[in-house]
Image (cartoon, rainbow, N blue to C red; front, side, top):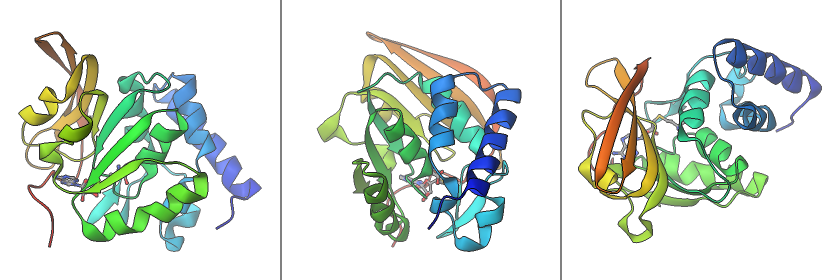
Length: 213
Ligand code: SAH
């Protein structure tokens, strides 16, 4: 797939739109500007890849809106070398943004088809996230604790296993709510103290238990 001047131009417009909508972190905007989103989508969506829209990515799942990716990433407040756990690899776009920002990424996906599809695109960018086919509710204890945890599907409640795997001083960004809409929560941990802030309403596909057959 090619990243043409036209795509780059559309991407710059998207960055302006995200900035106007309240995304101010320059590293986050730069990362979104650096990664061609159309590489993560079916070819039929190439022309629309830089509009602030979600698209089907197979297995009944959707790639998140660029604004949602930007919003969640900004809230993580990433530092280079942060160990980040992502739940819901999906298309791999959010994963790539985290890699572009210099994070060490561990990403879990419960849909086999989507899990299988991502590796070539990470190879293309020479990104090296660790990918796992499994149930994100359980996290990835072998690599815990994580400096940051991002959940890209709507959880019915905050999974305690994920809170346990968050490092002291760490941040978790998770959309919580059953039904169509979820409240974005920023969870921060300092020693044994865990605090939570509500930061707006979003709409995600649900976080489901166990792996799909
Ligand atoms: N970050 C992705 C979002 C994809 S949608 C992107 O922008 O493309 C959310 C993803 O979470 C879907 O791929 C879905 O299969 C996955 N998911 C849902 N429940 C899960 C669970 N329990 N563990 C891991 N992944 C899960």
